[in-house]
Image (cartoon, rainbow over all chains, first blue to last red; front, side):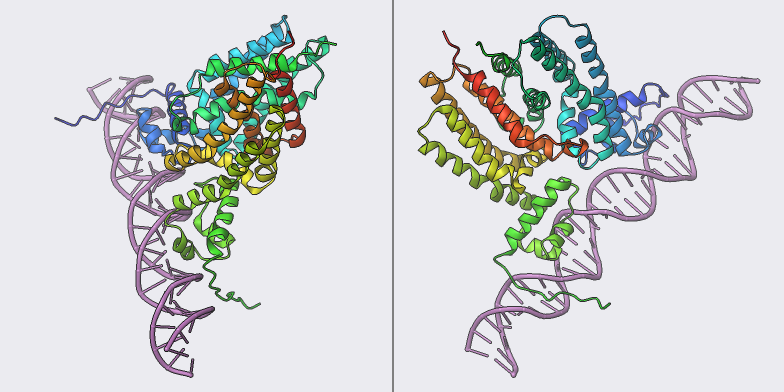
Length: 210
Length: 210
DNA sequence: TAGTTTAATGACCCGCCAGTCATTAAACTA
DNA sequence: TAGTTTAATGACTGGCGGGTCATTAAACTA
């Protein structure tokens, strides 16, 4: 058994995304504070020194993870909303479906819990996330709700508050998975959970018959 | 200006709860990892050494915070459910109201976010919280839902899944307040948020007229 | 009041890990 | 091929904070 040091490779282009991918996995698994940069580097197949070639600090790495992870998905949602011409409820369902396939079923699913856990310690990153993800995501849901209320499909309610209530269960599903999820034996089935949420909403939002 | 060292006081009985109260505040503010024990001791008006007189380790302190903070409230909910004889929906509203006055409006409101953030790092504490708070809380909501379904007040749905969806917005409200909450100017009004949630639920859960 | 108990102290220790930098070698150039 | 550039390395450091313990003094006792 001879210990071999794998040969160095110079791959300037590929490093940053490999490092953020490794960092995402570890941050989501263990939290920001408990993640050691040496471990991130190891998982990315690189030394700790190399990490500092591409990111100024642990916080900079964190910000990059958030930025490249989730922001692109918001734009997709905006495109869907812009081109949609069915019912308002259909739009809500399409937005949810897109969110689910692009976030919920990928490694990015851990980001909401990560942001929630670290928001207070990294106000700058939190602000960035708020402006680029939360605000825009809410606007999407809000527009769908307003469309439904305008057309008479939904009853009239306070839109801002309604947005929160609609989004909350979707976020909780992900947050749960990455926190207490491991405590219970049988996990909730995400598809069933989301279906029931939308089912409650369909009936809860609709204008009552006169 | 003479620096005075305040006189020592021996207050064996009062220390533990003063320490857990101080710790709760700081854990909730800055997270578990970012909270220094010296700071906890300072806030409790005591030295770091004294803290170790009452708690074996930082983790033990954490567990004590959770234990004495929220567990007692669950029993109250159970008493309410046992004595209730109105409609199932009324019971849900009473449980929510109690939760709100006993948790939502107190310092304990920060515990859900704290647990969510730290569950992975402290599986033992998470397990304790799961068994003593979450399971029992869910059972309460589940019983109310089943009562409503049995009486024909609610339509039939999968109870386990429904519990999650009903609870999620209530938890998110608190989690939000202690994480991203500081990013936005105007906060959601909790009363309005909870009222809208219950309003959506009232209509969403009810059996549709035949 | 002298003697005993033990709550409280705070200086200290030590392991951990973010961040540094002198050195190495891969890839490119003339 | 010799020379240059710069990606990559990993040993090292500084300080931070969890945890310890010898010392101090408050409260109690005879």
